[in-house]
Image (cartoon, rainbow, N blue to C red; front, side, top):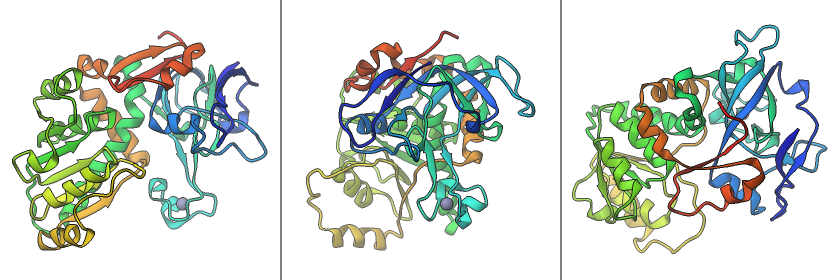
Amino acid sequence: MKAITIEPKKAGSAQLENVSDPDFHYGSVLVEAIAVGVCGTDVEMVEGKYGWAPPGEMRLVLGHESLGRVRDPGPSSGLKKGDLVVGIVRRPDPVPCPNCAVGEWDMCRNGQYTERGIKEIHGFMSERWRIEPEYAIKIDPTLGILGVLLEPTTVVTKAWEHTLAVGRRAFWEPRTALITGAGPIGLLAALLGVQLGFEVHVLDRYQSGLKPELVRALGAAYHSTSVADVGFAPDVVLECTGAGEVISDAISSVGASGIVCLTGVGHGGPVPTMPMADIGSSAVLKNNIVFGSVNANKRHWYKAAEALARADRSWLARLITGRERPEDFAKALSRGAQHIKVIIQFADL
Ligand SMILES: [Zn+2]
């Protein structure tokens, strides 16, 4: 079967190649791939900056934002042939650490977790893949191709859940949320914020085009200013850019007792002009919480699937701005900034 693979840590090694069919040890459920979303992590891996092959192998099958159709449910999965499923990405570490032991592999303490398409387990960019029944999430069949948005939705589902959980440390009635960055993560975070009843504001650098349109279509407000200039002090900031300047602005601009959740993974960039001690003082004097959030556990996958099923299908469809065939995977990986989510489509629905 065909698969898109890389030699991890080697730039330019990505190729579409023939590989053997998925090994049974990957799970008793056999799935035919329909589509796989491409994200910044995939791009970094193709650039040789990230990624680990399975032990004893040279190459890794890419892909962690999956959507597939069950071809063989195996003996005991509870799935049926034809069901649409998405594969959970992370697996608990083998030790296991206390968090992995209780099913919170998203909070792994020792870093020995593995991840499909990223860290030591083959991903989903292959014509067929196998999965353990307990890691296959069945989606609402009416979502169709939009099910490929489930994995990024799990990331923001966890971010929102943890934001509200840490807010319970004191009396807190949050009303306003500022999402920084209108990429797929930011837009899905805005969708969930609206579903949760927040007055949602989204900030990005584009002054016109699809991003402002999608934000306004949610009933949210769009800003193309800096965080400091949005004109209010948000109760919640969900930071989805990973840009240093935006992060320091978010911490200094969030309202009293407000929470800043960092989801963007950035590197380098200009040093923020505000000294760290001043950023710290701002957080102290306003009782702020600044925390990071990554990945998702099974509870978030369940909740994210519910949230997607509730969402407007035509709005979700506008998030998918590009579709490429596996042969043209390089085009999907070199997507321009005007794109929101580009997918590689392996089969029709
Ligand atoms: Zn762990």
